[in-house]
Image 1 (cartoon, helix red, strand yellow):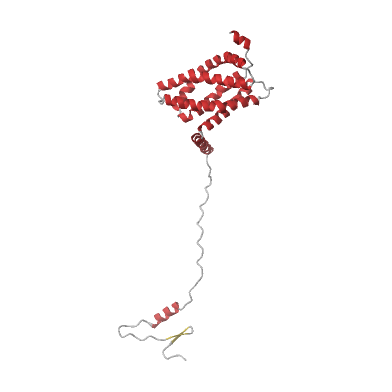
Image 2 (cartoon, rainbow, N blue to C red):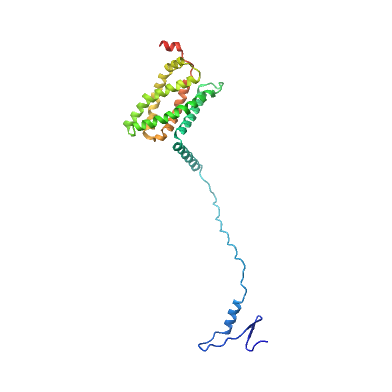
Length: 259
């Protein structure tokens, strides 16, 4: 049974509020609205997931020029090689020299031998071992030594380095080259001596015509740690020549002893 003056709203019993003596009371409809809102069950529905970000439309043409890709690859190879030079300088220069001697000897054989003659890979192995064991390490030591003796890169010091290269290093390393190659071919000491008498002086004369310009560029413009690499690069053509000279037949011992 409902009390007089009460309101019924949705099966709920709401009692009227008495007026406050201190001021006007709010409208009963406002109390009814606030009570109905507060009595509603709270919604526990999950929030909808956020919408994925809108994808931008692909460009009509997206490509990288081949030259740019090639430049990036080249820069990566150079950076990798420079890192190897810093980490293992002697080993890196030795392997580089071996690769250059291998390529130069194969080129020399293809240029001097007939097409019916097969390539002599044993000869190529000898040349590669010379580059690995002798040329690479000695070039590393020589360029470091000469840079300490003449640290400046002015023209006068560059000419001094060139002179020492032709007067000291060149004759010694050419003698070692011919002796090493002849010894691996089984030549005796008199035969090696005869070969040096026959081939060393012409080789030194040819080197005087070829190496001064190469040495000037190397000593004047190239950093010390890259000088063996540049020198080995210049030596590609030179190695084609000296591998040909080293492949010549044995010298006549009797003729060499008589002169």
